Amino acid sequence: PEAGAAFPRAAQLQLQLQSKHDAATNFVDAGNAFKKADPQEAVTCLLRAIEIYTDMGRFTIAAKHHIAIAEIYESDLLDIEKAVAHYEQAADYYRGEESTSSANKCLLKVAAYAAQLEQFPRAIDIYEQVGSVAMDSPLLKYSAKEHFFRAALCHFCVDMLNAK
Picture 1 (cartoon, rainbow, N blue to C red):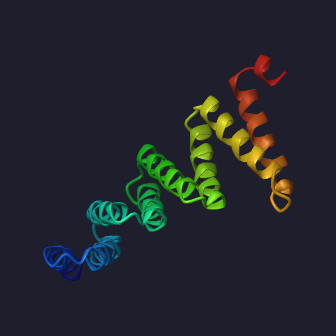
Picture 2: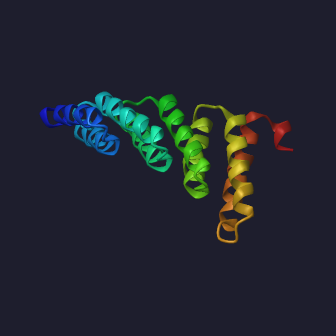
């Protein structure tokens, strides 16, 4: 905890010195230090880092930290809705940076949780969207079948008429 507390103080000093990148790095280090002892504080620190990175236009790095937050919500804080929100935000940032495969990876997590939470129309949309993108790529076309299959399973869950 003491090490974790030192990093945000260092980050504040870096911000006063107008050194945004170093401040963001210190907030990330604080988040990593707090991860096991105080997951909520880790999330707070990572959110501060994300704020700085987005101000700097570093959306890929911000997306990576949104994934880290989502994983904390998944495993430590057990709040799936917040995990899903952070995966969606990461996907948006990755899409904005033309990193389609990273965006799809996040979206597939969102779809899986949407299906678990019985939000089937949302899961269907995502699986079909990712499947369509996969169809256009020679490397990914073989995975498209799995995405469309998952969408079909969700259709079955909605009702039998949808599936026909």
